[in-house]
Length: 344
Image: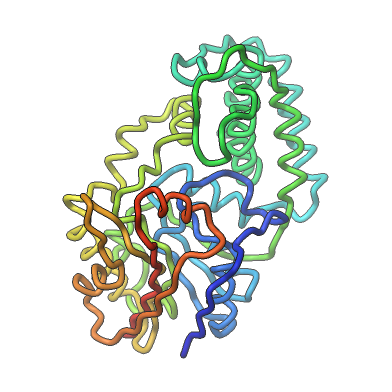
């Protein structure tokens, strides 16, 4: 397949399921679509670093059999939530209403975590913790909306002075935000169901060949974790882990985030992906320039140096229509993005 790649003037897509949670570093849906629409329908497409599920969800929309892998529990929850949305909005609204009534009448004491508890109005925090006690019983879509509603409530409690992707100063006094209302609104706003039989693996891509059959995937398409080691367990994620009682440090250590080991880890990943890709299949990575210790590293050159693929092609473009331009001015860099396409 000969891909046609165009620079997008805007990647904003507000009326979609992808605003369900402010997942850091996610690929834009419109950017993913221009590649997915060129892949033959019915192809098996794998995103080995699926994050919040943008590629998996959009792949289903274009008629592909999609697979996703991620080792971050938040990412897996969001991906599964997007691809398992009940066809009828009333179904999940009924589920929510029953859980809200149970949470309000529950006599379970809410032990407020020290870190996240300091960031919310006390009443808002109590509502969140009451709902969290039923988290394991929630459907996939309700779980994803629950996580997104927590981030919205956190912003509101801090007088909406935080951005959609970053946690700012601890603003006082706290504003009361009705968590139940935020959750109800989120369920309705992002209800875009799709028919699918996709599978999301909660697993480590470094061992992908152990649970995905050899030469069974037609296309691999991903925006891999940034090799400047963007911390996917920080900011809003840190709040989520605290509320759910999950070990953030253990999760962080399980991800590919250590720059010292990054090349070796990604070499292992690429070897596994090579094994599960069909002969003639293609692997597509959206990467980019990164500034490390004052030096700009070309993403395509970095990945090709550790790749088992001999045949490849690279498209390069400048970032347009994104907030990264602000940071580029501060860092005095002209940011470039590469799309590297390997063929087996």
